[in-house]
Length: 292
Image (cartoon, rainbow, N blue to C red):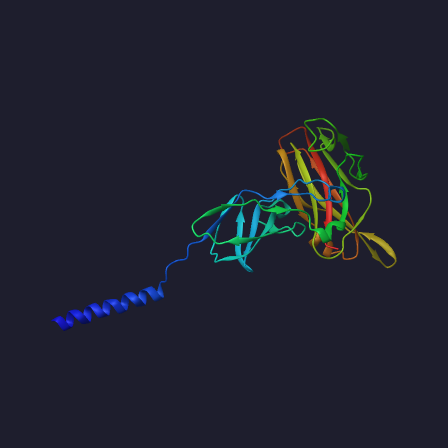
C-alpha cells in the first residue's frame, strides 16, 4: 500500500512538471497607450498646411510587426529589456475607413521601449512629412493668393470662388467655395496646369466641408503618334455632405499607372445632395505629393 501511494505521488509530480513545461507561465506585456499623433511641420513653406487625420498606428517592436490599431489605442507588447519601437502613422485611403494604410509621406516615430510588464505607458508619437521627399510636392493650393482652379467650360453651371467668410475658412484667410442652387445644381473645376505623375506612390490631400456632395476625378493626356491624346475624364470617388471639415487622402497611383508618362488634371465636382434644392462645398489645402 505504501508503495502504491508513493508511486501515485511520484506520477503526479512527473505530470505536474510536464504540464509546467508544456504550459509555461504567460508573459506579461507592457502596454503603450496612444491617443493621437502630434504633427510637426518643419518646413511649411514647402509642405503647406499641417492638417492631418491620422486614425491608426502601425506598430513594430524590435523588428517584429506587432499589429495595426485604430486610435486611440492601448497596445500590448511583449517586451524584454529595451528595444526599438517604431510607430507608423496610418490614414484612411480614399475616404474609406476599412481601407487603412500607413501613409508613405509621413515619418515613423522611433523610440526605445523599456519593458515594464503590466504597466501602461502613455505616449504621444510625433511625425512630419518625410524629409527626402519634401521636394516632391507637385501641386499645392491654399487659396490665400488666388486660385489655380478653373471652371470646366464643357460643364459650366457654376464657378468656384474664394471666400474669406469666417464660417467658411478652414485656416488662414481664404478657402474656396462652390455654391449650388436649383439653376446651378453642380459645379466642376480642374487645375489650370497639368501635372506629371511619375511611377510609385502619389497622393492628393485636401480638406472639405459642405451640404452638397463632392466628387474627385482625374483626366490624363498622353502622347500617341506624335499627338497629345486626352483620356476619358473619370470621377473616381464621391463623398457625402459633412457639417465639419474633413481631411481626405486620395491615392492617384492606380489611375496614373494606366497612363504611364502622361500628364494629369485633377477635378472637383460639387452637386446638390439628393432631396435638397441648394447647398455648398468648401475646399482648402489641395496638395499632390509623389514619390520622386
